[in-house]
Length: 271
Ligand code: PLP
Image 1 (cartoon, protein in one colour):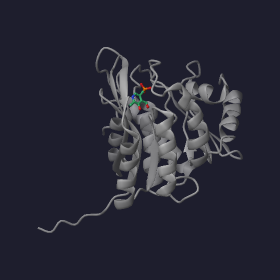
Image 2 (cartoon, protein in one colour):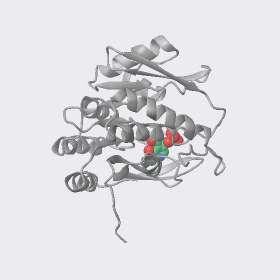
Image 3 (tube, protein in one colour):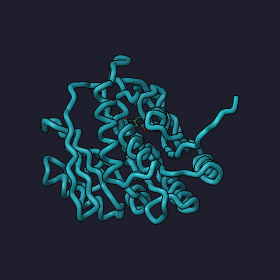
Image 4 (cartoon, rainbow, N blue to C red):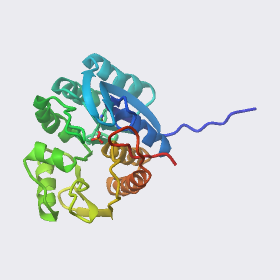
């Protein structure tokens, strides 16, 4: 029997591993699969974690991180890329220059999403402190889209978001660092009845509103959203459409989240 195959679009995640399988590259690959794109990986760090938090992590050697990016980009091609946990300033700098070499980022045709992961929802550090500046100065200018949550917004810009107006201020402050688009995620504004995310390129300010689900199990939610957006960009959608698709995807993944372990369970992109 002849097998006829169609080569799918590819999405690259440059991120860390979660031993609990809820966030990091595990969430990214599950999401890419669910969105119908082939997932490629450049592993940056191995975390020791479960539903109660991150107990520690080791970084992958810098040459191994950049080697993975070059190997897959040169052979298989990358239709869109995203970063998650990058761990150190050294890894961030090396990733930034390797992305230039393989023509990924806002100056090229391949979209690049930066999810500026700094800490877990339990407050455990996933980034060495001195690395925040490298995210602002080396990754943001190359990003097609950055997707910070409100804690990351505060760390990166000093702006504390308390409502719609300060969410706009945060978007403007983030755009100063040079990304083409910014998505300021409002899910952590717990007193708001809906989750309102603000997407902006400096001229357009688009509010994307969705229902707040009554669940504690949101581990891996940020990774899943950024990956679903990246998958849509890999399929050729523009940023506003890709973000709207990603938002639909994460709403369903949160609605289908489940309890696992003694702490916080994961969102679930299985369907
Ligand atoms: N572990 C890894 C490897 C991650 O990349 C992330 C988030 O990006 C987390 C843990 C934290 O996920 P959460 O904040 O959803 O618990």
